[in-house]
Length: 370
Image (tube, rainbow, N blue to C red; front, side, top):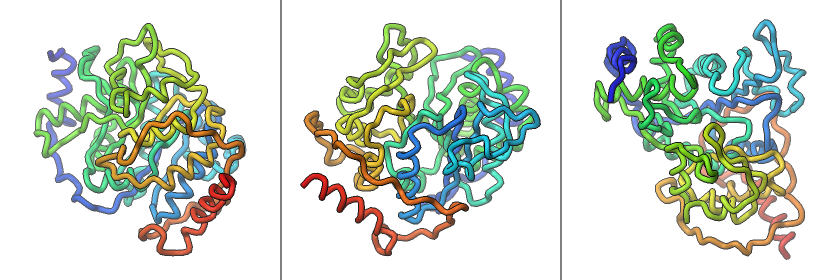
């Protein structure tokens, strides 16, 4: 089924422009993580542990935070108004008004800002209530081996065209297209729920025009959102939970809200058995997790640091165990970061003194268990 609006998009310069070669396999990956928050980053301890582990592994990355809840009448932040001091250095330089289903302007603003770094190969969008469920090295390995754009698509919606979840990973070559055709994207691609419909279908139309090898966009959900648990569940994305071991039954048994036609489940609790299940899923992140859902976020960060499965088999070695006790005390916080994010060189894990922190946390865990 092709609507008139879809037909017009297929005839556009954005779609008809011949594709450039896909980035070579094994090219050094650098991701710009684009996080959209209200006034704060939720679950900050887990994020800090996750980024600390990435630096210990020698991974280079960027984090750009857009806080729509801090109103800036001239589009420029006063960093002091962002109360989480440890995240201030990641604040985007500009500001744009945004709301549910009206995020495109803010997305494009941060998108272009991150694009200024010529070493960035991929862009990943995150919400404030997202948590990582894989270490960054796992994500980089997947992007090195298969560098294509990944979007969680719903190809059965035609109002006005197919859509994808707001949370995706886009390769630089596709990002360059949107920036090159910004006026067209701004005027023609934004419609109804802009962040769901302005990115995916233009790329899918290019794939239809030029072929999957030349202009691929992969239908792959990198962020788990539970749309399945609720009487009003009606979205194609409800099938996401089926990709988890045992349909994510441990995670879905946690204290949570119900999904509805416009909003997915919100999790008020995540235990150690649930987090282990999420680590064994194919997802890189999970969203709609309350700020206080995890009693021991630093321990979860240590679990991610110890994760060893390959991205081709994330459930390797996983066995469901509901009897894992919750520790009474959390591990120490990650050491403070330098004022300016470091730009480390790639190196193998645990071949330098940079492994001292991981060894320390392992020692603490062993001591607390005994």
